[in-house]
Image (cartoon, rainbow, N blue to C red):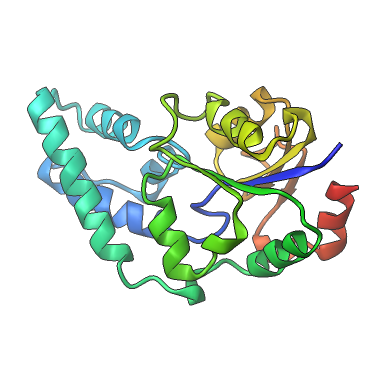
Amino acid sequence: MPTGFIFDLDGVIVDTAKYHFKAWQSLAKNLQYNFTEEDNEQFKGVSRVRSLELLLEMAQYKATQEEKEHWLTEKNDHYLSLISNMNASEILPGITEILTALKAQKIPIALGSASKNAKPILEKVGLLSYFDVLVDGNEVAKAKPDPEVFLTAAKGLGVAPENCVVFEDALAGVAAAKAAKMVCVAIGDPAILFKADHCFASTAEISPSFVQSLIA
């Protein structure tokens, strides 16, 4: 049976978390709330709508639907302006090498991300051609930790879920991968991402031999 590889975007391929943080922090000022990097950890792997709900809970602000829609647009516009100058220098260490090795072996590769801006980001950093399937926040109704995004990616690749390997950096993403019965490789703090099958502090620590063992 073929092995399929599914990659999250933020924190795995590129570090866009810093741009999300700045955009949410700016919006939080409108709510007179001091949005911290610790707060931002809860937003990783979570949809934009759910992230806004979390922010409103933090700020103890009851918003109208009109306000919510306005702020969602405002946050995304700000985020898009921040990432407009992204380039290949922002690809996390070792990721291009991993994708190149997988492509050379004709291993099917998918993106499985909550981001609704995944395609333009991959285009900006020059990695779009590596992916056979893109599943992002525009394609699925249920956000992580629901496994829909990864199950949809596996279906698109034509690979059974149990034969897929997911690379994730968020707690919700790890939970989604395990719910989909997939092998999960986490990037980040093992004390937080302990439910993953493997965990590395950074992408730079992932060796070619380790990736090869996942294919085998």
